[in-house]
Length: 59
Image (cartoon, rainbow, N blue to C red; front, side, top):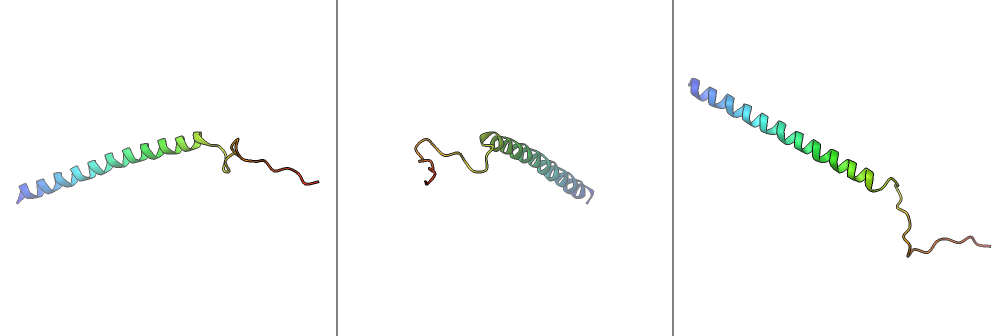
């Protein structure tokens, strides 16, 4: 009986240790993704490309 409880306790500790490790990896990946998005473009609206016609003022 004690061995079953010990196995259950060790199993639960292993599951929670695995969960903590996966959460750490996910947080690192999310932070890296946020930094990549911030570096990619500081503008909310992207700049017009060279092939886009610019607006001219009507006279």
